[in-house]
Length: 158
Image (cartoon, rainbow, N blue to C red):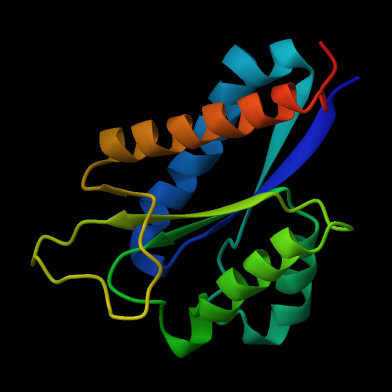
């Protein structure tokens, strides 16, 4: 029996390729590393939702049900219809609540071709990437760290 852990990946529109790639990376990581340790990661993302505000309650519930929250950023928190500032704050609150499964939140930032820096007020990213290959490395590193944290707490069956 696998222990399932959900990972919420929040992405602005301009990072749709990375959102798609996230699903592929989770599948590959499950096959090559996680399943061997009794863990199955489940990706949770927003698909084809232009305006998440009417569904914010469901988005919040999904965040509360996840073990990890990954925020991908490019220039800012996103437009008003798909802004992730409050979602990220919710993830941080969930980490502080021992009754919820949330264990960590990470921010990855895509380097802009224009060289525009990340907007003031954004959390310092855990890592930055410019290409999909660099993105793959960032996500795989996170997945490995998260898997090790599960194993070190004895939360997964061998």
